[in-house]
Image (cartoon, rainbow over all chains, first blue to last red):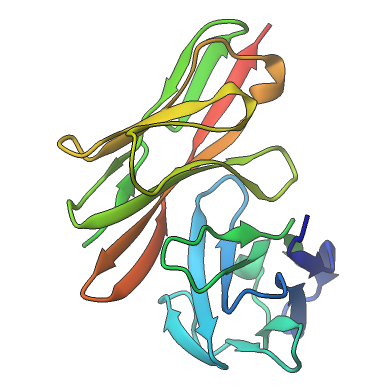
Length: 114
Length: 115
């Protein structure tokens, strides 16, 4: 069964460092998303991406964040200068073009900022 | 503003007892409804979804949910829970208005099944 894969599964970084989280969405999906879940809290929307551009972003997704689809398969989330409060689980998701398409989630990347 | 409310942050229940996890959403525009489950240290997995048709939908692991348009609710139920059902459950709603598509999650309900 096709699945969304994310790397790394866990990354520990120092405050102020740049981090790139990688995702390989399901191959025939065209919409891509990043969500964040701070430990013990709800799943929060960060950004959606379609046709090589951001279609929507939340207030969390400030200038420190960027997304890119550098090739035909990867979808990356970059945090330019990490802060302690960026520590969270980051989930990538993708869906088909169908309006009713459910989101398929990856297993998540746990980011720990020290 | 559109929102999804899960009224219970935690639900403890004994094994083999029935459980209902509540989900309400804010608007009566066109919606599609989902329940996801998150087991400890794992990603989100789709349990079930309502797109159209019968308002009672059945999902994996013996869960079912009923769409109630008048009450704008989509409560999740299971007649007899197992220890392995201990997890976080998230209700999610796609709101469709004027051609826009917004996918919003509830805050989650932690189901703890006790022996």
